[in-house]
Amino acid sequence: MSDPRGATAVVIGAGGGIGGAFVAALAADRRFATVHALSRTGGDGGETVSAGTIDVTDEESIAAAADRIGGPLDLVLITTGMLHERGRMPERALRELDGARLARQFEVNTIGPALCLKHFAPLLARDRRSVIAALSARVGSIGDNRSGGWYGYRASKAALNMIVRSAALEIGRRWPQAVCVALHPGTVDTGLSHPFQARVPPERLFPPDRAARQLLSVIEGLTPAATGRIFAWDGEEIQP
Ligand SMILES: NC(=O)c1ccc[n+]([C@@H]2O[C@H](COP(=O)([O-])OP(=O)(O)OC[C@H]3O[C@@H](n4cnc5c(N)ncnc54)[C@H](OP(=O)(O)O)[C@@H]3O)[C@@H](O)[C@H]2O)c1
Image 1 (tube, rainbow, N blue to C red):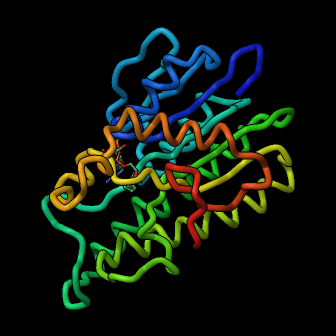
Image 2 (cartoon, protein in one colour):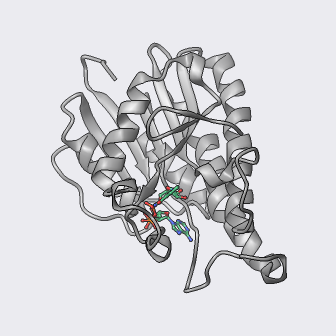
């Protein structure tokens, strides 16, 4: 992110709690000459912020956004994701599994980010370090799953972690300075976590601006040796 000409960032999911906080943090960071803020609704631009539309469940819209923006890109953050929708909470037991809901979780949490990797990775800068990161979740760790439940969310994030790993290996062959990772933001005070915040100690419920700052600091410290791995907000590596 030290390009003297000014770096370019893309935030996919800028309408979300964490995505919006990333845009604000990057807009305040003078190293970034342009921050592309993409969301389903588009939203407002700013001095260095260029707003645009994207729907990660529609590949044409992802391809069109990537074409419009072009490269070279220094930082791509995929911050879309879904835990509950239209009042339907994550499954607590096998009897609650529903094929259409499972497919929807995979559509938003796995396939959407995978298609963003497909269309945005080719735009990464070649001549310097670049980072492409997708927001995953600690509950997507198979090794760390000790309480079960949340079948669709856990499985779709575990699958996302695998997509990131495969993409990292492929990207690394052509962009040796690129870093492709999955990130866990901690529990962040957004609409996504809102129904589940009651038992979270206040000091572990991060405001979105703090979550964005913490993750940007983790990103800053990543070298190409980190590619393909999963990191939490405090820099700790999470097992797949
Ligand atoms: N909050 C937490 O405690 C927490 C914990 C662990 C992991 N995460 C992960 O962090 C990421 C961001 O979450 P958040 O807390 O910022 O949640 P949020 O405020 O609910 O934002 C969700 C984002 O995902 C996009 N999105 C949601 N449903 C979608 C759909 N059906 N189709 C297409 N896009 C959709 C939204 O797009 P628009 O921009 O178009 O509105 C928005 O950008 C997610 O991947 C989440 O799994 C969050």
